[in-house]
Image 1 (cartoon, rainbow, N blue to C red):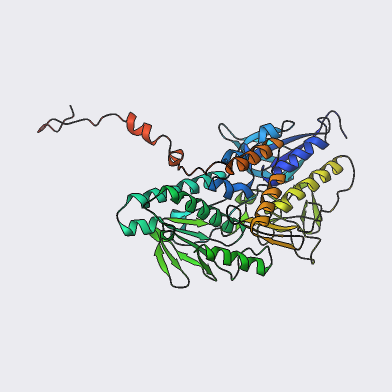
Image 2: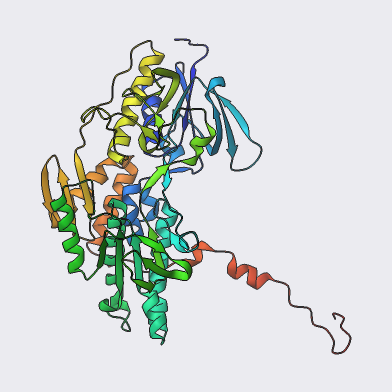
Length: 453
């Protein structure tokens, strides 16, 4: 250990892996041992399991994110994007939110940019699709759904009303199921304020390419989930693909076609494209190849000073057969972050790193208020107990005591106060009204002169 020149640890990305790793490193290593630098385009970490509840209005959107500067007080936080990593030179190029790029030298790098939505070249998807991976997308979807209710209530045209009240979700994984269930629950709750509309006017459609939903749990739990959604009059299309949505006209592989104003894409993720601007080894799915110690590996050679975990990394799962990798879940990401931070500290102190090994505990999912499904350590639960376990587990996992308290307060108030169902659509274009009001008046031309007054 060099007390004069502490090691610099660069953490690329402040998601589940980056935030937890940086936090643990800042606690385990003194300032004489290491300097931790965290770079992320956003000044906060989004706790993604809370996106459906934030979108449905069960918790405040601000309470589902964790401010980096308040949580990582012992770290240096840079808000910007890493545009290139040249590990051969131990150098990263960072583009701050404003100003020129800067180079950062490092001794160790944690590569954790996470993932982005995995889309397909479906006609119309780029123009009409809505993602569900960021807090901005969650807020937008909430405002959009409530806005469609207003459109449907205000029109006398049955076609406009039918289009406005048709909501399509593509992807039957946890993100898609929870988003669909929570948004339908919110919209149904909001209809009490719309005497012009009835619950049966709404059409909620789930499109899933495989023959089951929630692949992380057993088939009987997935079947139970489908049954519960069908009881709520949802249209579940299994073994069906979205083939086109040009001009909002949804065309499915089963031959059906209909117009929808809302098309939500939740069909999987892929590693961040930022990795394309690095010299790290990748597998056939474009993930950074890793050892069980979370060290980056190129073939049989360890890439010294490089570490990765989470959605963007191919980490062997030692609890399964050789060749299996850890699933891209928050459960693995948080635990990998802790193991990786401990291993970095071990290497800096001259000790050997330890393998990451964690048997997946199971999964929990919310299907709306007081409804859920859970499979934890082989124990299966449905309904209210599963919903309660879902909330309890995620409340325990969100970082910081501050956020835990705020989330619990939100949930507690919801027992006594009605859900907020106000659309704040102006958030998405806040300057529109001012731009219109401040525009210079049109210059009039005198008749017959062709010249402005």
